[in-house]
Length: 203
Length: 323
Image (cartoon, rainbow over all chains, first blue to last red):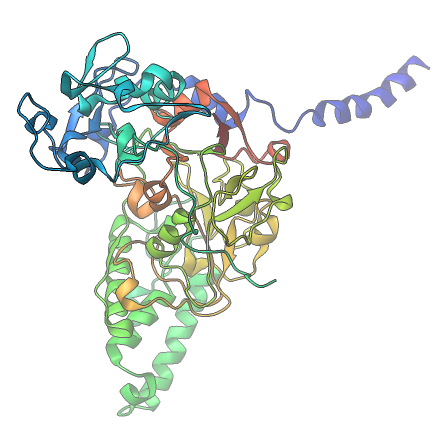
């Protein structure tokens, strides 16, 4: 009787064992990934990597001890340095502010609590951004300013989940600056038509 | 051309896992066809070139027809076929292409992240992919599909994949779908000619010339990751990407299956795939899964990630994440 019972159990056991979960988190590629813990120098493995462009600066924060670079900002501001106009001398042109900065629309900040010019800029420190604690921020390192409020985005940007790398996944890490993608005065992306569409279109 | 030089069954070959017999059916057929052709050519001496078109074109196509599976070729043979294909492109389309057979980089496993929160549906990635990979303009083949999704739904089947209006729309999010380069890919198992396989760097690629067009792989893929060429792909010459890879964006023909290769022609040179480079919102992350300092590893470690149809056990290397 017992033997019969056992005989019946064996195929049943077999079925139970073989019908386990098809996939678990510790299986397959996750296991490969989790066991890879040695940092790799991609630059040496890949033949062609981006030569470090001149319009980048080293970021003042490291990620896991690895330095990385970001695109510059100052060379893209039309009238930098600001102190060329914003100095103690008198401005004689009428409507000078409108001519110089009329294109700037500030759509930044929460509903009903918009940011003012002087939230990031200071009257007596025109060539730099100034945080609310009074420390100067170079315009090439605007992540230091943006990260004061957007600290989650900054953390993700340092690690690589926010923002994007420039051209190459290998070699020296060069990432876009906050202002490479966002207009600091109205940082939200605009609504626009998509570049293309997917067929079938009229179905 | 003496057939005995090229086609000798007794020739010593390297042992390989794909071919058990040293004198296989293909080798035999190769010999038989060549002998037959030699016979008919000798009967029709004098008018050979008229019958077969340009002799160079014929010779190249002849050799191309009987080449091995890419995985069985030696590096020399790969070089030869690439030179033939470059020359054929010149003869057929009058275009100068550079084709590479660059192999996978050591200690690299490609992985991809897609930020569902950041994608705004601008479709820049789709356009860049079509251009980079020389996709058929006539049938509008696209490897990537972007779905406009209602909140709370994470199955692309329920999204709108045909949207064409100003984006982003309020209270909608966007989700891109393409080949996920599964570690345990069902398409590879389905292929009867071993024309598709997983490269050591994790990408799933196709040897187009060994694809017989049975479309088993398309049926096997649970993600709609593969595309079929019902007609000869048409690409305007001035828009063609000339820098090509044998396993990547070289021109396909009618009756061949194709798919995303993580832009093998770019990624093996350290560059980002075209979709990642084109993305204006930074929703796409690409990198080496084996490097703990890479961006994709940061995403896997610090973000809420999920994969599509994970319960199927296909083990894709494409993670969606949210901010």
